[in-house]
Length: 170
Length: 277
Image (cartoon, rainbow over all chains, first blue to last red; front, side, top):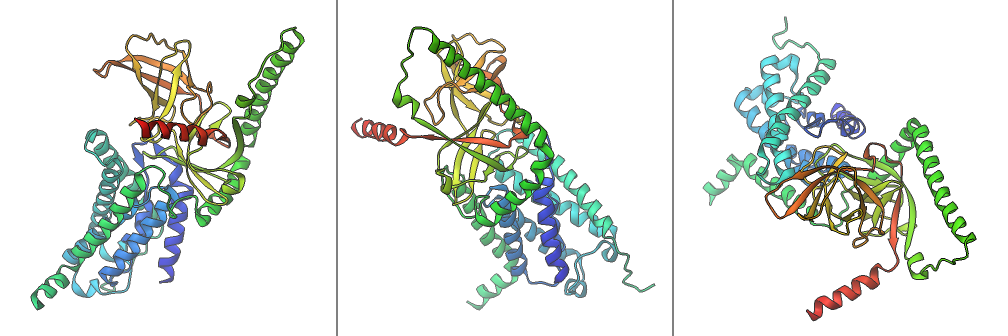
């Protein structure tokens, strides 16, 4: 609970103070704040995930003056999270109150979770932002580059807070 | 009935998704129409004060460039003043239109937040209705056009930057009286913009100065930029000209909000004509 609130405040601050001012020719932008939604505890209810995702999106929207766009992308990410976790994890893991962690769930699971989530979020975000299929090449290039940059930043953050916890207890 | 209920519970993730996603998309569509004010924007008190605080630290880093800019502007104003004084010593007495003179008022405001890397860029100013800023006013700097005021609260104002796909400014090509509109379009470079709707027969050359036409919110004759590249054909009977903007969006500190004292009168007159026609 405490960690989630700290993570929320810290990531939103970093996002609007630092990453809002970084960009590569407006093609690649960084949105590591989506880690807030991805690292929510596994056991919380679907409805609560959506509410928190929507609230996070609105908070970012207020700073970016882009009402609704980040909220929509975060809600799409929340849906992905729910479906992905339901398909890939065992029921007892699903109901734990821990955040999904690299050390506990393994690199293969964690990296694919982060990468696909980032891709879905950025796809929704940039498509709604442009709101047309003209210049689709630029948009898709932008989606790809932004996803890769966000993914890299999220990896860095995850490595910083990496904790090795073996579930088998060796 | 029970089955329907079970169906909803079984797929609750999807239905919640539909509900929240629709809400968010509706919000964003409503927000996109021009001059729709909203509470969730950088002119609300929480976000505005946060940016204000942040800017008060950041502005120290750029003090020397800000000083240079102000000094340069001072010098150019002094030069202009000198011209008036010189003219006064001649016998001719310049007649100034007293209406024109008091038509525009300029309100100095500090930029507390600025973005250039988004597809739709906005600025936040550290002054609001308290200083007399209203929705729809133009915003300029000493060397160019910045944008249009979109939202105002008591102490802050959100400005839609020129670097926004919906921004349009009416401009003229210097030395020809042809006018067109300046848009950023789908450009990705904050230094460049496009000049549209200039008829084909007008000759544009590289380096020609582009100024505001005075038809829109901005006073006439403010330098906006220079022609950078001509001869871009869009297949229509208008020229597309690439413009190098004179405003330095990377480094905005102080801007002037333009208050047009005759705006109301002008709009009333134009509305009248619309009613008749």
